Image 1 (tube, rainbow, N blue to C red):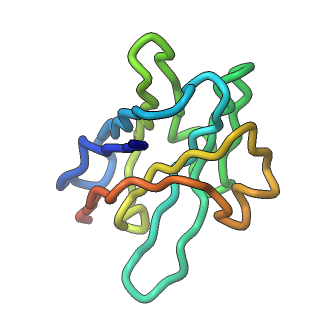
Image 2 (spheres, rainbow, N blue to C red):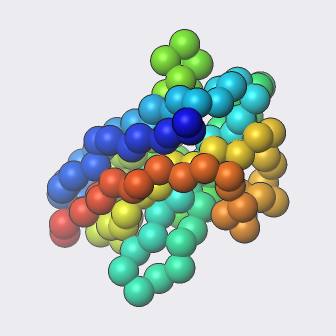
Length: 125
């Protein structure tokens, strides 16, 4: 059974940091790209970042470049999203998702195969 379990969300003040974790099981981790997505109230879901586990390629949406870092521990089947200099507009439910060898196109369209349950991130000003 495929499972993606997010953790690490919570409440932060603007300028602070949080790290989200996504622990994966049930599939060959190295063959998959893991993406982070977020959805704020009243807004569409958007891609935040993704990492391709086969070669470590990473990509970020413009609004988080320089502030967020995605990393992967293949030995632990876990992907992390390190979020620094948080802003109130980062407030959203964050989801991790997995897709086999997916590139930017599938990430942009949110066309991922497996999804976690989400974790809430709230940033106060």
